[in-house]
Length: 321
Image 1: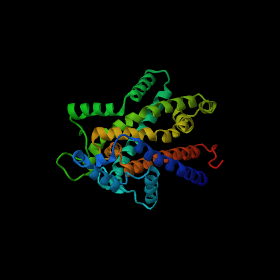
Image 2: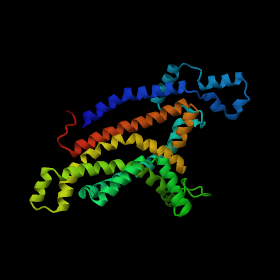
Image 3: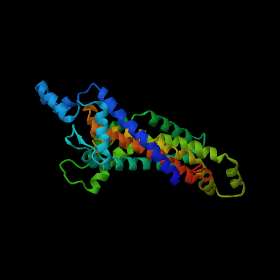
Image 4: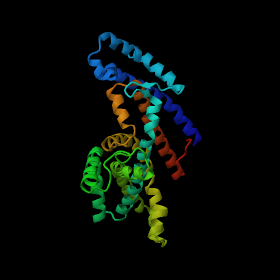
């Protein structure tokens, strides 16, 4: 396990370097001007000399590789630079927002895994039944529904029509202090919507895996020995059927991040969504690179976690083979 983790960590280094260089290259080719974004409305009346001075101060007039290398060497020492759009250190911008995004993603992902496993097992036990068809149809409908559409529908139903949950934000309007009760109420809708966007894959994978496991010879043998159906399901079919689901943990991370950005925008959740949008439209090189590195690292860690969990669940898999 340790050898595989070290090997993956070494392979992640060139991946992260290539990703950050790609971000700087794409930003340099973008039609958006970081100087005009930084100057705002004042840039409309500023002279070309002033704009050139701002460009020099921001380092936007330097070659692409020079900007990338300068950012990389400073990032290795912990200095991620300053955000030109938010006028604050990048580390501060991310530090103030990343915790809320992690909380939302973790809660939504846990809810999707638990609910998806439960519905998938129920559908697998009654293949071809009305419950199975209803669960499968609901999963395909949710898979086709964009997260922002689900978010808007949830706001309309639970906030506007029923008035049982807040429409967005972190706290109630007119309140400066974020209490645990307010956070719990405000996170319900975004967490449920994000979980629903991830739910279909878990339902379908669990249904297929557990359904196939119930037809295998070891499970039939367990039934023939007179074991209770609950014991057969939990000790034999469920463990074997859930192995393919472990691979979803890594593969769903990119879509989880994308969905979180959309959900945070709809519900005005104070995560990294707003910072990401501003960094992209303002061609904020340091902030764009740092956010992209975080997203890429999350995907790599998710894939590693999938492999580790699969190896722990299936002794036939060799970590260092």
